[in-house]
Image (cartoon, rainbow, N blue to C red; front, top):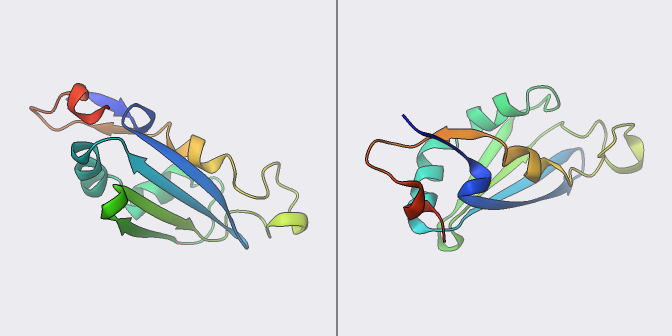
Length: 115
C-alpha cells in the first residue's frame, strides 16, 4: 500500500483555544477530503500528538470546505502567558499534523488527491 503525507493532499491552520489547540486540515480535492474523512480520526490525531496532548481530541467535519477541525484539549501547558512551552499558542500544530502519513487505498492515485 502506498503511504502519503498529509502535506501532499491538504493544508492546515492552527492556533490556540485557551489551554487547547485548534487544528484545521483542508483537503485540496473532494477525493482528498473523502480520504481524510475516513482515515484522519480523532484517535489518530491524539496518537500523533501523544507527547503534548494530555486531554481528549475532538473532531468536527466541515464538508462544504473539505475540512476537518480538531480541538486538542490540554495541549498548551496552560496556554498563552501561563505556559512555558515554546509554542504556547499552538501555531505550529498544523504543520506538525501535516507530517502524519496515511495509507492510500488500492486504486487511488496521488494525482487525484492534489490540485
